[in-house]
Length: 367
Image (cartoon, rainbow, N blue to C red; front, side):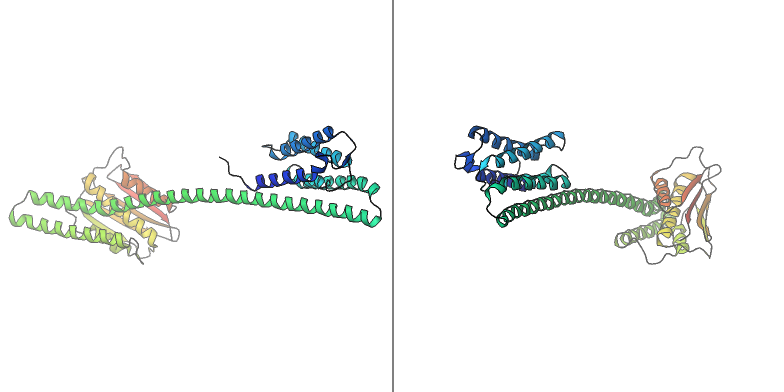
């Protein structure tokens, strides 16, 4: 059920006022220059026309025509009743309604024409110029005040609708932003977990696999290294959960820490002394090195991996190449795909060349 709002209550009040001021004519308390039946018909036409003009769903020719009929009917009702009484209030109502149907200047024109009708009716029945001026001035001011009040109300309603629409758009934008943030956070967490855990789990698996095929003291060293990797993994997970970002990035130290104690793979790290990266770019290079090392261990069949980071005032470049078997048609897994997205988000790129071994080049603009 539709809730009754301000417009509906205003329309009901206008209807009550119109009926109240027309009661003398409806029940024969005033002299009419036309038959009462015709006068009542004119009053009904006025009400129906006003209702049509204000309640029609869309502005257009029919609303304008209905409003014109209402204006003419109000003139006819006032011109055909004696004495005048409060019937000019019907003219005030038509002036107040004008802002809902026609432009403001047209409403002012209606006020002027209504005032001319009042003058035409009041001149024969007023005794002095002062009385005529008071009567005409009173209804003129009431019409102007009603017109301006209606215009203010309409403007306020329009602004409220615009504000509501903006609020809905803002809420929709907020929902889209929240969804985008959640999606980005899910991608970031998946990259963090993949980059952080994947490499160390690979080392842990290799150590345990090697220990499984050895006996006694020979296996003990691998088990100890596996235990050390597991403890480091636990510490890294805790550090990631507690604080994924650090105040400063020591890129060379981070890369060397990842490269140590790798069974069957020698990783050389070379970071130019003039390389300076901020936290975000440093994190990207660290994650890139992790992914490269992990992929080399899992898929390349390589013995040596060389990682170098160089840079100048315009670009910082990480270059990694191994001596493995390479691949004819390499495919981007989740790790490399995530890395590419990360570097592209920073304004750089990531290129994979597998012609002879694997070579990965990651570049970002200098910070």
